[in-house]
Length: 350
Length: 189
Image 1 (cartoon, chains in turn orange, yellow):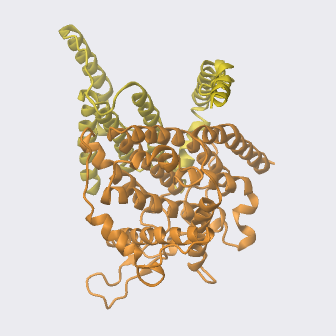
Image 2 (cartoon, helix red, strand yellow):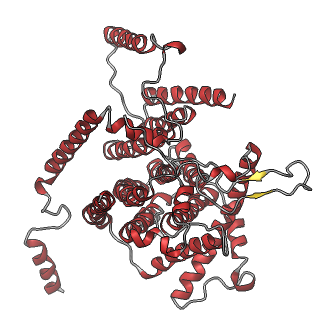
Image 3 (cartoon, one colour):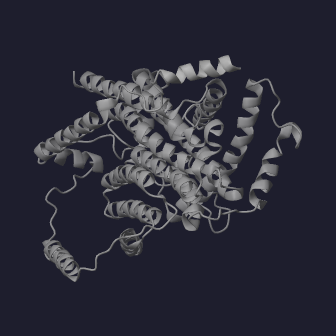
């Protein structure tokens, strides 16, 4: 058998300091703290952006420009009574929101969030610890993140099935439908860029596009980019694909019976997933983070753009029906994705 | 050390979860423990350093069990217990137990550390995914292709089974009277 040489694996890691267990712990705490806070701030941003697009002002009364509304909402969520309905399956009902929030944060463990840094020496105990930018740098990062986000849909599914409520069970059924529809498109759309780069590691994706805007994969894979964005909207349960909790049809779907912090956990998970999808799209298609120039600000700008795009789409587009989603995913997007993969393969071979 | 703790933790959890899957009378408990057991099995692959297989286990079984859930949703009330019909047949119990024991002995007997040799050891510098790919497309090319054809056959069969009445809408009322009734009611007003 011919021995094949691989150059792009394990090239980047060598010039970095050693990653210790303490560094990973610190990183995990940073991710948890900041992303939870950003998720709270995201709800405020969403209301403001939607309001401006609909010629309203949005939250204005609590604090300057309604900024303290986040704190008011937080207090409300934490202090509300935690209700478990009478005929519900108690254990599963209480576990379901934790699944959504936990998987969203586990997925964030394998994507690069914030730059790496070393804690200065003068700080006691932890001084000199190197904190990596990726908490768990896996060689198969992309697959892991997508798999974890897919596992996150067990949250809505179990919540809907456990609560002994018709709207809930419809929400759960729609979860299964949505999952089985978009999952194929996500995998096939991201397969083409993976073929081009030849790796499943986010670090390799960043390296492959290091040469500036003209090297971004979006110019080579525009079709895959659009497909991935559409599937990403379905994956994060955003309009136009928010069938699971479509207020006009199924009250609140899987979240109908939830209150207080358990309800809040679903939404922390949803916003964390929005950030994860934005990071994946930014790294895989838009060049990722660059070490020179404005540095890490670039990826924050890109992630911010995708976050804004999700709000923009929510303001601009109506919901689709579940059968329209299935039709779209299986009859339109999947064939396009397969053709894209085949064409990419042919171009690479020739 | 960490690996040992992780291994025993995962083993205990997996066995308990699959026991719940078999023993529980509640569909929701059974399905949930099945799904989480499958997810925990991927932990073993990660401990062994087979990241790629671990993630594949995760993705495949998350999707597969999700499809099972949808069947459970259609057939059962998930919040109630199921009335099981267990015929107490000691012969079945004995035979089942014996065959399980024989299977375990068959697969477990050759496993002691000297007997295990990697037939296709990992190449230095190559990632997990690359190594799996190399083995799949050289040594196991034929089984791989046969599996692909089998899945294709299953897919086409599924489409044919489901597709006989595909151009008829299940929700639309196709009878002519439906529209007339509305008109009659309008006239009456």
